[in-house]
Length: 68
Image 1: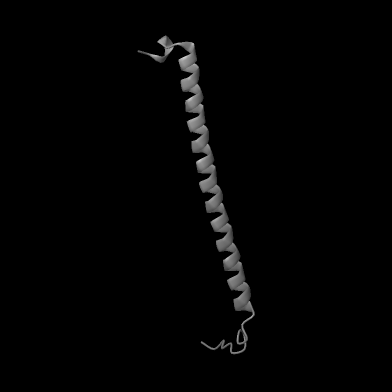
Image 2 (image 1 turned 60 degrees about the vertical axis):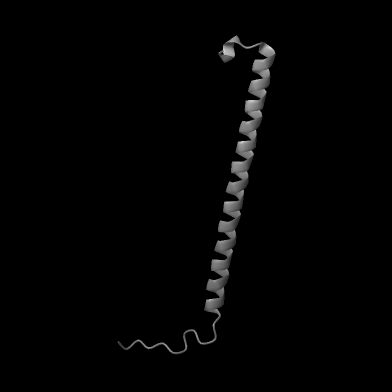
């Protein structure tokens, strides 16, 4: 039996359920993408903080030897 032969009410119900499932999938994917983006942002902040802390090191630049 094809969908075209189904009662219009059943066809509408099936289409509504399919749309609901697609919406759930889209929301789940958006949530995963947001989580990944947030983790990347946190990693970038940590990298910047590490670089800032290295530039503040007490001994940085005091014993530079340019003789090779």
